[in-house]
Image (cartoon, rainbow, N blue to C red; front, side, top):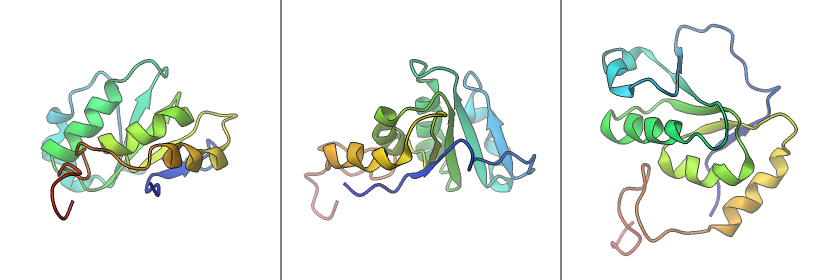
Length: 131
């Protein structure tokens, strides 16, 4: 599986207060921001620790239910073993935790080359023709 998730190092992630970037707390309801999504280009979803998966649900809701097409970025305690699931739930970029080597990320995508079921981005299951 060729990754489409944009992987950033902590140094590459820029938070300059751009009004088109929204930082959504991991306990916030994405449905509450639906009215302002047209003005947003990127939504940063935070993983305060790698065991807290609420941002996966937020990303899925933003992509599938709300149809957000901008950048959904994972920030915080982001580890390489989470990247494939992040991409499948709707994230388009991820900022790796400091000290994690981004060059190791492709190996994770190579390990999980295909999936039987659909996901947030490719909704049709693998067995459906043209999927």
